[in-house]
Length: 552
Ligand code: SIN
Image (cartoon, rainbow, N blue to C red):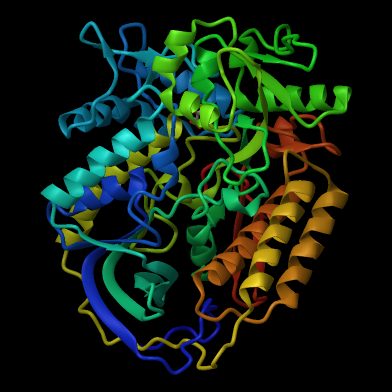
């Protein structure tokens, strides 16, 4: 069986030998969603987890804040639902949000049973406050090291207690499709060897794409590979215009940037201007704990007003011993940079943090391509709407990763088509690719274009310019060879183009999408979603504004 001739692949075979392997399930990515799906699926099925770097090189591992879940005595799933819908600015889907908030508490308890040591006081879980939560709701571990503690427990369970075959250093290049079904993935290992992984189902949990901007809290691996390969395989992506900027990344010339968790504001830290005055008071009833989009917009106004590129996070009025104990990651990270949270306000600025959009899924993590699932930041389940509620992302990975495992149990139990010999129709050419210095320069350029033309604020002329510059940059490059940095660059260029297309289509300001030329929310015309998918006939992106919410 051969592939459709028009389907684009990122890589050429160059006549090289391709290895073959076969599993029931391939999971791509080792963040919280991928680990949860792999562990769950491996209870019944033969599962391989492919991750392009090391197991722990993920956005999950860096997460500081925690996991939002309605486990406290003052809380309820209904309250969590209401907060999520409010933060989502009219575009969160109620059905997946209900799934999230109702199943979340059980998933958190299961994490505890697995060995995750969440922080307790007097035998009770400590619950932190974060922006736009109406009650303290965020379960945390190691103070501000939640991601690494949770990922550590899941990794341990996978390595020591499961049959998951772990393959690090496997860069998944493209999905394999047989007609309209996903049948596996093509992967490049560290030695440059291509392997065709045949699978009855693939779970795309490859994370986000913060690296498409110049400054991001995401690790270097967050290059949107899942979005780009999903796009090339014809999968529907949704909400790609909604990119959340975190208000308080340390304002220094680093990428990834160092995050100062929102929980600091939850414990009472202030946002101040250069004169030391708080600027969120009077802007929103929750002041510094307003939803992230509100905080970022106000920060931008203050920075323009004062002609500066940062503001300050001031924790000087809080008890120093408490800060040191509660926020060891932040405290030590600042200390190693010569900064002191206790005594000096810390310079902060908004930084790309989270892709709300992604591969559109239903409540079981199923994408528009049969046998391809997605969870975590790679997916768009519909829960985050136009602005994600803080600490809902780890929860989303847990809940939908688990749901995927349950759905796989149902689906894979049914007899499937016998595996047919699959011939991979990669282009045959021998590609020399681009030199490392060209790749590094192009990667910087795409970040600059996106930051300037499609960043915190957008307008038609900037978006048009961005689209043109991204296309020109791509045209200036040779087709990619076999280098992972180079393949990531091409994925970044695809994600940049898709993000700009979606952002150009939405003619209003909503949540994290702020258009200077359409500054108002327009519920009449725009309480709806934008999808993008590959159009084979035109060999270009097809952007659609859905007539009703949730259409797949
Ligand atoms: C943070 O700790 O502020 C990040 C949490 C999140 O993005 O949900």
